[in-house]
Image 1 (cartoon, helix red, strand yellow):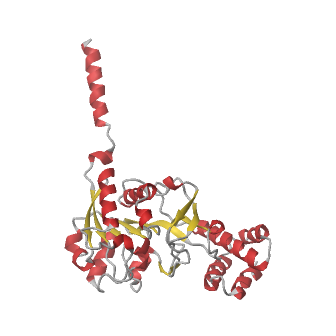
Image 2: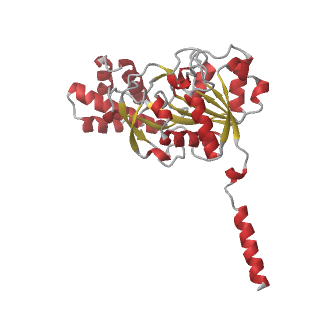
Image 3: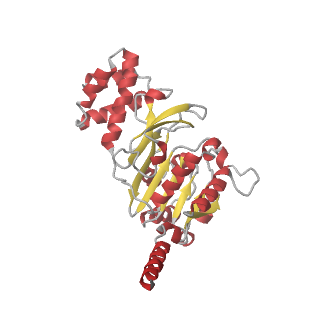
Length: 327
């Protein structure tokens, strides 16, 4: 009997010890920057209150999940210093404009991430430091307009539903939000996780529009989602899960690949181009796409496709025709 009781006691003690490691760990500390030195978005406008919508939501989901706590700032010069950054595990940006002067403040920001910290950017984080190449290369792009406006409802393709940061979204989904397109986007630098589905979006353009991606940056991790212009997005529970998993991934609490996927991006470029060109030039979309797929390994063709379809912006049909003539 004593032996059985001892086994039961040991089993109970073992059960108590088998807690999720992240529940036992102290929450990570995140510096949240919501400063606007360009256009000020509604979700980061404090409007005389102590916190804006973004700051409030991040504090709430961080506490509820137990993953992180937040410290808020709308003064990057004051907050992003080598000394102050020592206390943080990660950074969050919903920002615009040139936040820091050249030199050490910007170096401190880049070195913080490269040292192994996490960076999470939402929406206009890609409309920040447009004249600072170091930041543009890190986040991998700069704002170049938003043909898909705040009131538009568009379709999205999830290229990797198994990735923890986007698993809650399903393979394809519909969302109402403002969607950017980008200058200085390098498909060989990031792993794009979901993109606009041109077949279910308006306007339809002949090029790939990535919306969420991840990358390794030095020893650090970068997670970016373009969603978040609309205040309604910030009150959406699915978006909360998307952000929480983005933080967990960037903080190395979960794993998921970050290796670039240019082949996936090239396929999306071909699909968008075929849809657009077939409609404008009265061509067979499936036949056109088939011919393009046959050229998928031709680096010169893929470069021509990306450059011409982007330059045309749906207006210069001569550039569109040059791609077709190259098939």
